[in-house]
Length: 232
Image 1 (tube, helix red, strand yellow):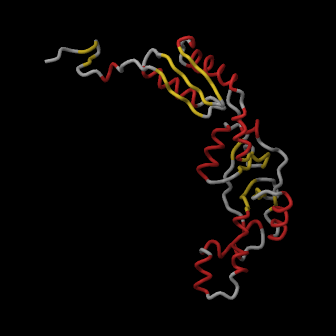
Image 2 (image 1 turned 90 degrees about the horizontal axis):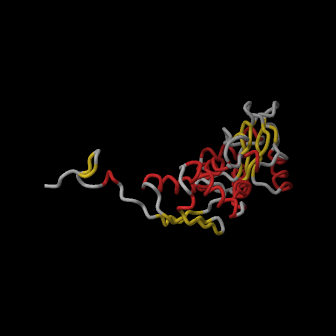
C-alpha cells in the first residue's frame, strides 16, 4: 500500500487571486500563519505561488532608502528589484508553480519538495485547477505507520509476493520504522532486490541489511555458462 497525495492533502486551501494587492497578501500571510499562497486566475487555475520571500525585497528596498545606489544594489539582485516595485500577486509571484496531482505518491511529493526547496505544493486536477495543498508535515505523516503493519507488508508484500520467496527463511524485526533483516536469500540479486523493496515500503525509516549473500556466480574467475572453467 502506498499513500497518495489525496490521502494526506488539505482541501481547505487559502489562495489569492492574481490581482490581490501587496498589503492584502501580507495581511493574509500573518492572519493564516502560513508562508505562502497559491495564486489562481479567474478560472481557479494555479498560475504561481506568492511567498514571504517574494514580499521581502520591498521591505529591503524601504529599509535601504537613502543608501547609495551601489550599496542598495548589493542588497537586491536585478530580479528582486523588479519584485520590490511590485504591488499585485501577479507581479510578485514565482512562476510557474511547482504542483502535484492528487493521485501521485506521497514519496513523489516529498522528493519534489526536497529537490525544489519548497515547503508545500499546490494540488491540482488534470485541468490545473486548485483542489488542495500538501505540506512537509503532511508527507512526513506516513512515518506514523505502526511497526506491525510495516512488518506484515515486508513479509507478505515484498518477500512473498514480489520475490516469491519464503518469509520464514528470514529473521525480520521492525522498531520505530527501522527494518532489520537477516537470513540467506536464493541469490545475491534477489537479496539486493528484497532490500530495495523494503526501502520502498511506506513508513520505513531505514533498513539494516544483515543478509548473508550467496557468492555471485558471474564474479568467479573463469566462470562460464556451465560454471568455472579450467584454470591454467
